[in-house]
Length: 362
Image: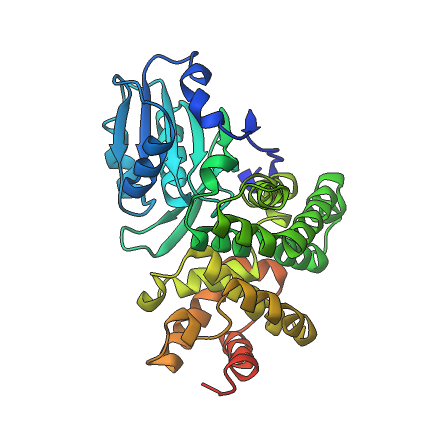
């Protein structure tokens, strides 16, 4: 049985509470030798928020991608640890999870931005050291503990929150497309249907609450809309793939994102922003133009990309479209979970977006 066929419900323990990070030392009482895997900006924000960090905790800061090379290298410095603590965004958390899995030890996950569901999923997205998508690594265990502190996250950069919203909004679009196009009995199983229902719940939270949540974050005020949105992004999103397995994971929009990872100009654009663009391409592939039009106002309010220029692809657009499309239709890519498409069809879908949003053809 493949890992994506196994139901994984989420973190072993989960706490969302204002100020919970200041109790981290007591929550770690079962362990003797924690090692923190973190970034530079993320650790600076974390250390400024909590009162103190025990001097005997090992701290390793990582500035690159969640690559296999980084996992192998950092793991060599963690052999004395009895628990890994990941503190950061999705790349750092994916790196920490992969290290913990390699060393067969528990992992505690602390997101410093509401940018992905990485804090709640037992997998890591593995990139090359240059940032090109390579594979998804499935781990043997979920996190020992995931901590979400709204009072801490309210001060995180707004762009990461918007990115998280985009990455989470796609849960409905991708799961619905996979399940609708599946031709087997398992797609109708109880947990697959629970995943689909959860994705609807998440979609509605975001469409109804996320714009206000962004405004709350800009004002630095924790509100119910903000907390609902970050929990949808960080924790509920993970249950779609956890319950649904292969029927609740990535499909069209992430295949476009992965294709975009081959375009250097897009490397400065956050993951969820590129996934949000991928939603529109996926809808265009299925000729669901009315749904694209219905989303454009929402996209505008959240500054989501809707065309190539928004993705920093200004020069050599024809070449870029070809590169993105060829990767997206790779038989090993997730697009094939919702149907069979050619590179020309993917290019045509992206050109439809150009005509809808920038009033020009590429």
